[in-house]
Image (cartoon, rainbow, N blue to C red; front, side):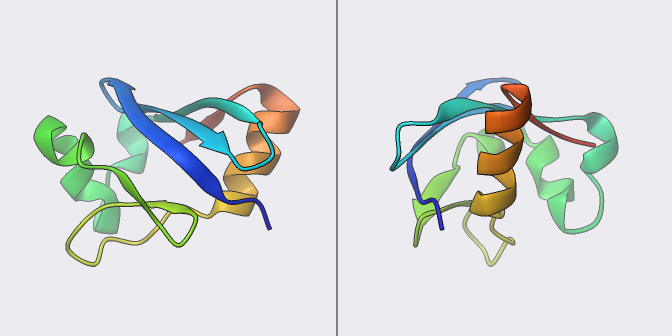
Length: 84
């Protein structure tokens, strides 16, 4: 399974991620994705707190991690992963 080795908030609702195999690209959240457990990401300060936990993009406070395999596959196929 691919592991995230770098994550940076590069803009509003946009991350840049790099994987251990060198694949890299943006991960973008559409407003429509910011509901339920992802509603906290509406706060720009909280969004910028993205980090890496066990090879996955994560945020503090028990927020769900983003699935690294799905993210990797979408970046390979489309150059980015858009969550909507």
